[in-house]
Image 1 (cartoon, rainbow over the protein chains, first blue to last red):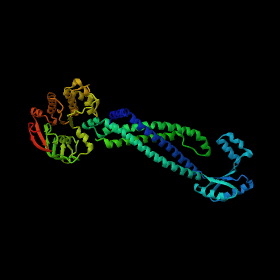
Image 2 (cartoon, each protein chain N blue to C red; image 1 turned 60 degrees about the vertical axis):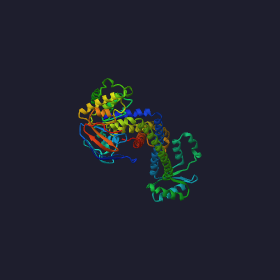
Image 3 (cartoon, each protein chain N blue to C red; image 1 turned 90 degrees about the vertical axis):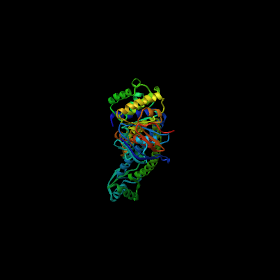
Image 4 (cartoon, rainbow over the protein chains, first blue to last red; image 1 turned 90 degrees about the horizontal axis):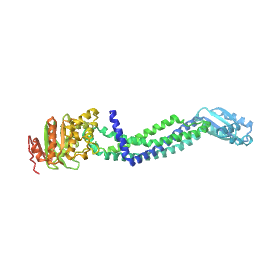
Length: 295
Length: 228
C-alpha cells in the first residue's frame, strides 16, 4: 500500500472516531476496564510465579528449637540432624542473631525485645542436597526432641500456588467476559461507521476500490479505539507497580525474594497491553465488517 | 467485447429475472436495453458489473469471465466499467471536483494525474466553471454530468447507464445524451437501459428488448417498439 493511501485511511478513521462520539467513549471505556484488570492480573501472576520459583529453589529447612533447650541438647540435636540422609549442611543462628535480622528488616522498635525479653528461638538452618529432599528432611526433623517447628519453603510455595490458581481462574473468567463486552461495543461503533459511510462504500465499490482499501479505515478505527482504551490502564499500572515495588523492595530483599524491577518488566506489560488493545479493537471491527460490509 | 450465453438469474426469493439471455456486444457499440419495469433489464445491467452473480450461463466482459472470477478480482473488472444511475449517487459532502477525484483516489492514482484528468473530464461534460459546487448546489442535469464525469474519469472501456435520464426533463435529457454520444464516439462501449421513447428514436442505435426475462428483439438501428 502506498504511504499516501495509508495516511488517507488514518485521517478517515480518526474522523469517524470523533463523529461516533459517545459510542466511541463507551467502547474505549470497556477496553480501559478490561485492560486494567488484565494488566493488574498479569503483573500479580508474573510476580507470584517468580517468587514461587524463588521459594522452591530455597532448599533450606528452618528448624526452631524449643526455648528451654540447653546448649548440650542443642548440640545433640545438631548431630542427629546431620545424620539424616539428604542433609548437606547445618548452620546455627542464635535468637539474638534472628532478632537482629528482624530489626534490620523492619525497624529499631524491635530492639526492646533484646536480651532476656527476646521471644524468638535459636534456629538451625538445614540445607538439603536437593529441593525434593526438603519435605522428607523436615518431616524427620519434626520427630526429634526439642524441635519446636521445622518449616521448608516448598510448603509456602504450595499454598501460594493454590491461591494463585484460584486468582487465575476467576481473573480469566472476568477477562473473557470483559473482552466480550469490549468486542460487542467496538463492533457496534464500527457498524455505525459502516452505516454512515454507506454511500461512500457504494461509490468506492463502483469505481473499483479493492476490498482492503474499503476495509482499512474500519480496521484502523477499531485498533485506534483499542489504543485509546489502553492509555489509562498503562499509566495507572506503571504508577501503581512502581509504588508497590518501592514499598516492598526492602522487606522482600531481606527475606531473600524480589519482585521484577519496574523498568524492563513494565515495558513488557505495557507492550502486552497495547498489543492486546489493538487485537481487541481490530477483532471488534472484523465482526462488524463481516456482517455489515458487503464488498 | 461483451458476451452473454444462456444467462439465467434466479433470486433467492424464487423469482427468475433472466431466463436465458444470449447477447454479444462489440467494443465501441451503443446499445439500448428497453423493457417494462420488472422485465429483468436492471438485473441484466447488474450482472454486467457483477453486482449480481448469475445462476448459470456465461458472461465475459473483455478478458474477464464474470461467472468464474474470484471476488477479489471484481474491483479490477469494475475499473474497466463506468456506471451511471438514475439517482446520480454522488457523495453529498464532496464538491463536484472532489466527487470525480474520489474515483481516482480510491484506486490510488497519482495526485498530479488526478488533478489534470478531473479537470479534463469536468470540462468535457461542460462543468468547468462549477467544479467547486456541492451536489446540492447543482441542478439534476448538472449532477448527472458529474456522475458521468466520475464514471469515465478512469477511462473505462464500457459505460453502463441505468436510466440516466429517468429524473430529467426532455431538454436536459438531450444534453446528457449528447455527452454520452461523445463518449461513445471515443470508442467507449455504451450500454444504456432506458424507458425514454423519444431518446431511443432520436439517437438511433442498436435496441435490445427484454420481456419477462427473455430477449425478444435485437435490432440494429432500432426504434422503441415495446408496448407498455
